[in-house]
Image (cartoon, rainbow, N blue to C red):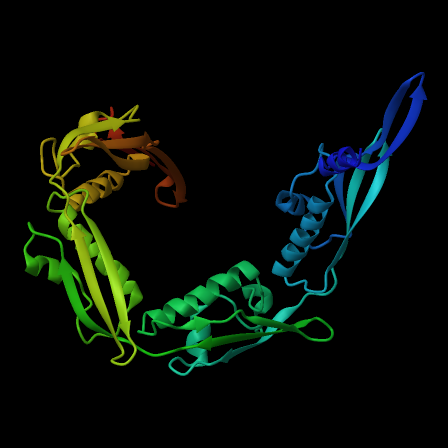
Length: 404
């Protein structure tokens, strides 16, 4: 019987249960008397002025029509608080009130005391030696309140934006060779009147590293000079994580432009704390040569296939070349006949691939009319009609008439 009561509570659909034991002749009858959890009829907000109810409701975990869940109510309280914090209201107080509506239904009312608006008046950077404070502040979105803050929005503190800013600071150091830079959790301090925010960012720059050795392994069919030329980071340069990531793409492109569509470059780095160098190694998997099987054009309800096909720098049967394929996509977009251009690749065999081009035609016609008046010509006017993709063949025609 105890286990049955536990199971009823664990189902999270009741608030109370009692058990009554009754004798009926020679039988014992157990009666479980339960109080069901109510259903949420509607969610209301009371006291919100700065934020509209519909904007708050969009952020909340839905509860309307479901059984009342205290965990969801608590979670929504935190969501509302965070929403107000993003809008600089750090003294906001949010509570929840449950109002019975009858028929085992209730309304959840969130009572909001918005408090006063707070803004950042001081940003302190601790631990920076290589970059000056103003250089770091210039790299992030979060800023101190200024004279024109009412127009520029300066002094606003958003947690999501602050997290991004910490990554921006880290990236700034990584681009300068500080491979082990650490950015701490920013400290937020409110004044007694909760109108001013002091933000403290603590960082540890660590050691600065240069590029040591740069090695390439695993390839056979591309000239070594071409592969080495693709990597811009050379021995003696300050290690730059952004350039390193771009080098991986450039080395990969060296093979994909040579027909190795499935080429893969696995980079690795080893930091030497004594020599303050980073050893870089690129291990290449060429795989095999791939040829273009078919170029499939889809979605063009107005344009002819040939209008799209003539923009390609590759044809069916050619060796795969990622550079020419990407350039072909840009050529199609540059025609300005389509609102959307997507190019995907579908393997059809070990050494063959289909290029699938999905486009969406857009309106390419334009009509304009103008009028004016002069003392010499009197009323003047102009009519102009332009079609950039006539009959879907890529022809452009303009008709213009002027009168006075």
